[in-house]
Image (cartoon, rainbow over all chains, first blue to last red; front, side, top):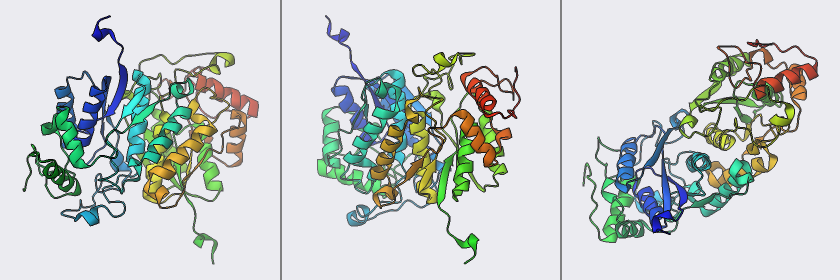
Length: 234
Length: 234
């Protein structure tokens, strides 16, 4: 039997167009999955992510890339979708204490629910997402116990779950540092130059000062790799 | 202390504009909650529901009514959002066997996730939704074990959950027959004349023949109450 006749496991990948989700897609590809990329346009402040996600999808040569709109702005409650200011130049200690105002209420719960629905439609048995506990310790929906609880809700609450296909939720970067994620991305030839991390971009440039930019820049520095994206202020 | 000074428990109500969710809102009101109505515009075939929901909200005199858009049509997989035909004039045995094609993949999981996010933003400690196991036995996300699993995912995956506020998900109609729901709605003076149940309306009229119309008409007949809505074909 030729190699290309081996049936691939179908995987839905939550692809934001950011660094973590792009490396996560590269991991899923390396693990032999047939990729179904899913990007959620949630009226976020950093809507440039959607365009980056399309470029990342093209870079992977993936045919299946669905963009789904959900208006989280109507729900309010976050600096990423509302009028609250995105904090800048916070020290690591400030960034890692408590739950940041860039937390979007129940975001991963909503995103994983959409991914589970998409998985059911395309017949995927696994959802990959780029959650990471170290850099974003304040986001409760990035924790392993949440992922397990979500899997259980899908197992009992969806057609495929009831029919015996247990959807697996994989978060391969969960315990990695940002530097490790970058190194993994380099190893897997992930298109890091197309990724976007900034919460508050200045036109098409990353601001360089929000939590996400600070974490990214520190990660590239620690990995000893030059960050390929352009910043408004270095 | 005057009665109106008693702090009310805030509740998010998933209001589709259908019979069950309208009676559910009436139950929440009777149970003394401060209502925050949430309607999901998911590009369903029966988009008239959204208008009905607004009228129901006005009838309850509720100030807080949020409509949130999410494009489930992009995910596909259901007769309610796609191009599959809505089945007509099915016998009860056909309707209650297996999971119907009007099942929207992971719909309640998605809707409850949005409701949990809204609850977190407005400070609600309970979400009411009109799930019902008897009439829709084929929908896995209407089952009590799904509701409990979902509550657990919210408890470990949201800011309010981690901070100690356990969100309760209440489905007060879960084990009622349609006739019992109608009788309860009459007792609570729910605006049943504004509710809409049809999956496949003809203009502003209910078709009278889809599963949802058949169940509704049978329910009114069994309750001995005249159905106040207009049908394209009686």
